[in-house]
Length: 224
Image: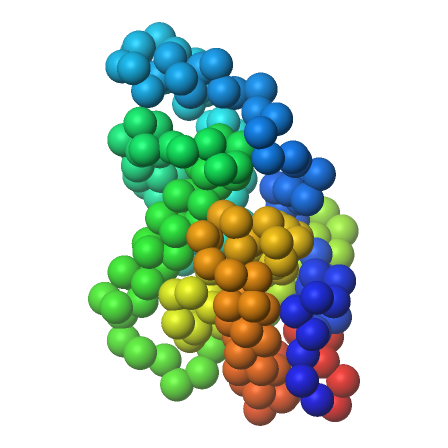
């Protein structure tokens, strides 16, 4: 059975991950409360740039944390993202809100950090879910649902590492951020059909990976 990228976000009946940034579907192009600060920052006004980065900081850290996960130093990745955002203010063309633009940089930075880390480590035959199992057995801090969501997110992040960059980025926006397809297309500057195809291919690959691994099948909510 083929996946439907237009269906409600969530990978194969997966849980919603914790600390997910708010869905972006309600933001309208051209309506951007940060626009005055962006214009001033683009002219080199340092105070405006500092204020801008301060305002978007929590959203950027949350986005990096959701995408990067425990395998990456979130503080380092978020700092790198903020530097990249500051360097890119002058190139912002206003085709979306500045927060959308900044989140896109944050997502790409976090994915790059994950890929760089993976390149330095020994390739794994399968996903190592032992840390999640140990956490489940030893943790007494919080409801079980929080642990289940954390385990789901950890597995999903590792599955993303197996995908080509365009597929990983598109699926991240769709599943973790719940962006509608037209918004994803606008953010990535590609046709909607390209986004739809990337998400379908990504979900088909992940479905096969999940169905081939009984532990993943249980964790990600796949039926036997």
